[in-house]
Amino acid sequence: MIFWAQMSFSPHKEEKSVELPKGYNLEAAGNNLLLKRPNGFLITAFGEGMATDSILRVAEADERYLRAVERQERFGSAADSETVILFAADVREARTEFLSALEAAYRG
Image (cartoon, rainbow, N blue to C red):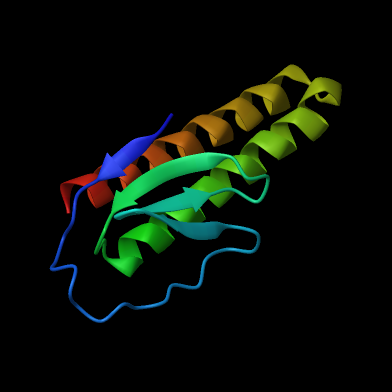
């Protein structure tokens, strides 16, 4: 799923750097900034001038989501039914947090 967020301030403002979670990359593509996961998968395209704190929130929320999915895949199949439900709830919560961060970035 790819989302695009519009500019939140003038493109002529001084460019700021953002320290992303390990492995995440922010690449320039024309007037857009592409946020990519450590495996190179494109998460979202931000419009030029997007606030760095919004970019960071999206990357951190995606990282939490990926960790939740990894835990579910690694331990979920060997766990009892209650634990499977807890892993699934953790994944849903992390996914909701990720989507909320994207929405907040998009709305500015």
